[in-house]
Length: 231
Figure 1 (tube, rainbow, N blue to C red):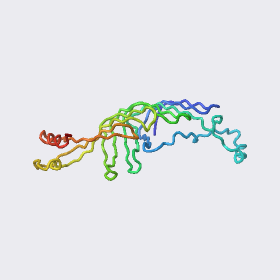
Figure 2 (figure 1 turned 90 degrees about the vertical axis):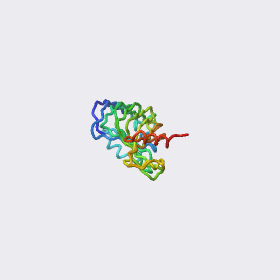
Figure 3 (figure 1 turned 60 degrees about the vertical axis):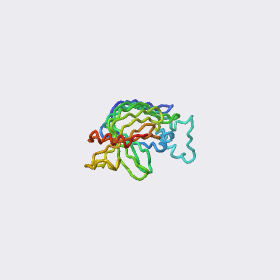
Figure 4 (figure 1 turned 30 degrees about the vertical axis):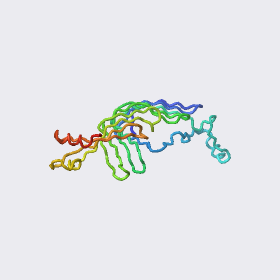
């Protein structure tokens, strides 16, 4: 990701603390997998060394085991990013790695992303979404890309449990109404929008479906309503 902003870095005997206020820039992309663990609870990826003692440590490294405990400076890390998200950022969330399903989101908002060695990784904030794509595989066979019309994404701690509220559509350019009602008057095919509403969480979304005829006349819309109504 590409960002601009200000950061304050402190490193001392207690470890390292980084605070930053940043804004996303063009060509930025953030990807995470909501279908499985992110592995952010492990804090063994940062190690501090004393450069003045490096030679001595190199000689004794095979003799002295590395211990990661509360009294060690090995990985005491705290990150706190206040992110102003702009439509320049592409947020891609994988919802099913087997079928390669994902949601691409673009929008505005503020998100506070925090990493703490004890609490792990968390995100808080809201995004108002203006566009995007939901690549959705029906019955694990038929992949379709639904365009996101509008929606919101709310983070309240665990990024896997972010709340979704999305309105999406997939357009069929040409469809016959006789598929809905064989007795319908045959005429030229009409455009049909397949609507999908997405609520729930990123890890466990709830889907609802509907249909609309953006270019249909009143009679055709009544036929669609009659054919899809629930008794």
